[in-house]
Image (cartoon, rainbow, N blue to C red; front, side, top):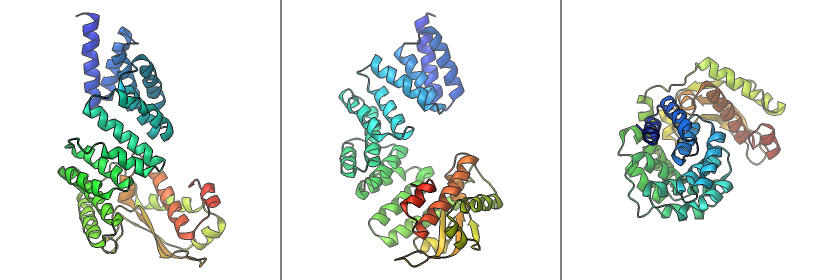
Length: 335
């Protein structure tokens, strides 16, 4: 087998391994082809994709930018670089600049959809909602039959304040039983945006039922540990706020109760303060702090992230309840 044949075969193995989630095998294939021709565009693309899959956004972005210079008429490196600039670097303006020239060279439907997804997400991030809706409208003639993609588009449509488009995509997403709960949750939010209380509650009741029947999340901690992290979070609050919460009980349930959902509470809510919040200068009264452990666990990928989710939830709920000022939020890292 010639060097070129070995390179082509290993590139195919590497990209197939990535698609199947076998990252170690993909990295091994990437290392082999780099020994053959490090500057080959396919070799560079595989190296960047492996770095991205391993969570090394900086390394991936560096290679994608090199690829943009090497293959200026290939939209793929621009789309991938823009996605990293947006989601990993938090720079939507840079992502939009990178994407701008990609559209000149896109000739495959898959690349077009991905570019529009990233562009729309970036526009939402800079609060250009009208432009975001216009961006999504370019998919009106596209055939969307992938439920996962449809769910992403429903989320983006809702964030762009286009509930009608979101509802259309939800119907596609619901075709996959594994996505039914997620799709119904977005549907509830569509009804919430439309101020349609009864159908919102009906959708969210289904979500609660499906979530309760779902397998336990892979990341899990005890109620005692949730309480310990929550108490530590309260210690970060200003003394005058902390004093008002000194004797308030912390209640822990897996998810909001049926009664809360019947009253219009999101079944995937992470936390809730009960009592009377601050209004027009009137001091708030908190009767309990409610944390929903199963929802918090599902929002995290590891124990460190779970601890951070609990802390952020407690601080955010406190901020909302006590009407903290911008300076207070900044001091808590919530600005």
